[in-house]
Length: 257
Length: 87
Image (cartoon, each protein chain N blue to C red):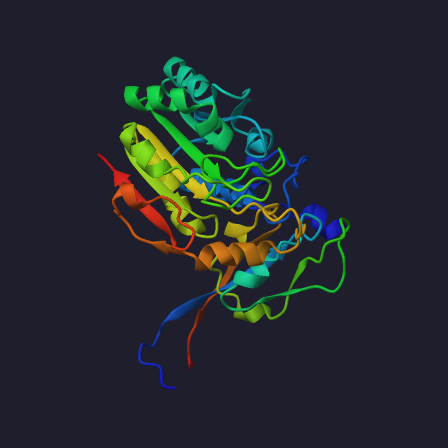
């Protein structure tokens, strides 16, 4: 025990260490996204005082409780609008929004369109786990066709990179948490970029199969996402919707100067 | 096997593990490119099997385990730059 107390992780200066380990399931992709974000802030030229983290509700909403940056937790619905107002008042800060599907698409779509059209400098890290976990595994706009356990989804999934591009984003990328190096360099790029930028992270939800309750198989799930994805940079964003029998396309799709 | 480029230095790293932080997802054990880590037979205080170091000399300090760990339980540091004599 004593030798463990003496050691400390290099990222501990960015974390509230009382609350680590986190409340997420073992092997949840959100933990990897936070780890990558901390390394990106360390490697970029930003000082940690200049970074503001805003998060909303649900599993991803707990991000702001762990990070030792200036962080805000906001109710459902106007997360992106709130971040845009903060940015207008503090023009020297970099605003980073950790959003999930509810904040980003379901109740925040109007804010997304307005903020993107105005071109306010925001970095949105959208953790997409393609299902509502807490409210009984219901289908959401990004659930693939016929893939939800509570009710079969009969609609085609939403294409988030295309939406972000049409809203006027200057940087659009999509990664899985296992491609941590790519994700980190995308974050370093966007931290120094002036403009509205969106990074979508397709993260496996460990409660995706609620019938079998297989919580221990995190590495297996992550390997499934890794095998069924392929990197294609500069692919036209119209083709990026998630199809059931095709591979998920990852990469950097939009990078305007 | 002959070595064509002489004087090549390969980094050797040291793995540090905080075993009570681990939640047993085993990403580090699954994705280590040099197969350094292994799953322990013991439990930590939360009841998970944490990773242990199987062969420390093979670690090349790539940092992948520290990068994908969701719970900040493992990281590597550079120990030495070892010169390759024979592959």
